Image 1 (cartoon, rainbow, N blue to C red):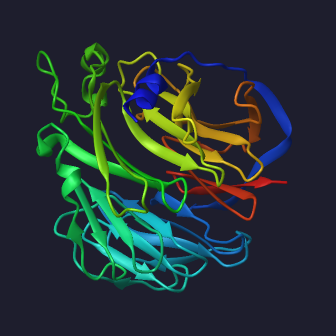
Image 2 (cartoon, rainbow, N blue to C red):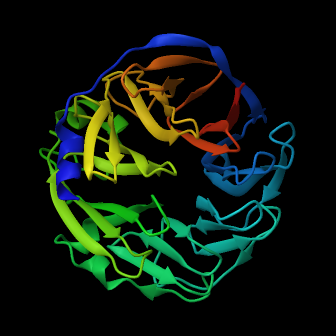
Length: 371
């Protein structure tokens, strides 16, 4: 595991931005209300017809938790109010799913039309993953990983998660993925504060752009927990690397894509690498100084999609950039897809079902890849 992680951060990338016009990302939903904005945090399509995006509307300093739901493949959307600020989604099938919020975990059996709060985790979590309606894992700050065997009513702490070195105060597990029913991965990191002069990491970058750019990207611990028996046992690893793993996506054959995102002083905002669980190897596929990749996807036909924004300046994630999507069949030649000109964002999220692909921007827009 350590060898593939190190290779992923060090090998060279291949890049080609030839435009691809055969398919087009078209707007299906656009929030357009006077004096308010919609921030979307996550998007899921558990089936080709049923989808849900979660986030909050914002007016001044007031935030109102909300979601938008479709039952006809995105042709029509309706708003469903939420009781707590949402963080992330996970769906097991067309109907059953879980939502992580700022205060707990909720479950739906109606694809987001209604939610019921389930159980109580010992501490905040960022994401959940379930292999069936009873067995699941929750990950979060302070090296927190919990497992449930009753659908989330009760959670037990996963002791192996605390084994990697590093102060829990500056540590978090952020992602869970399974390549096969037996083979799974939990990713996280430890990153103590690093600053010089008067610039401090708790200040937004836009308060001191020069100070932010002056911060040298330094290596820190990246965590992985690996299971090869369906989650019965987990084996921890830690490696000193640059960046943070923010996404891991797997296809049914075990091939995977990993996304590493870097700080503002790094020469590249992100790097995408390929994981082959059969050989245990990984190789870097893509990096470009002008493209901030924020999500990745593997289609059922083997195509890889990279979605993000074109950097508007050296300080990233401050000014929204034009949404861009690249696609490749061989993971060597990357083609730029046609995206509606109105699509701008700081971050985007991909979702897929039945061979169809959707994209949500954090400024209230949902697009679909027209076939």
